[in-house]
Length: 174
Image (cartoon, rainbow, N blue to C red; front, side, top):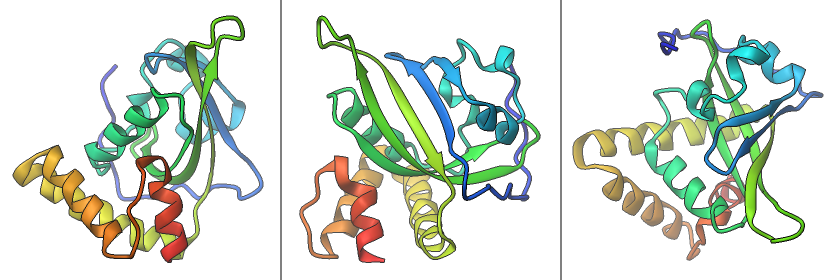
């Protein structure tokens, strides 16, 4: 499936509804709720078994997903702010809570659950500027340089931060 061309039009989310999805341990979609389909513009048939990156917006820095996967693959939960791309090219910003799902017998990670809501405009302005800077660094110097910048950005605000708490820390500062 070809990725849509992004357009500069935001989808306004209903603050009372959650976008929910689940994936297997490799990130392939195994469940989406109706609101996920409504906002993304994809049908259930178009989403099932596809990589969750089907909704990844090109404005998202790779370092965010690198840190996210490092965290959840260790069985730790993480919160992240993500800009997603709908099927029609519009975008939507979300605050996402990622949780690992485990096999009840073995304790092994079998997939991930994500619940998303809209994000406040104040936090969004800060995150959008940070992500834009991270993306530029990635284009010039690569993901490792972007990660160093992000760590430095957060440390300047007074904390030595574990990756699992990056977004929570950004929200705390602002």
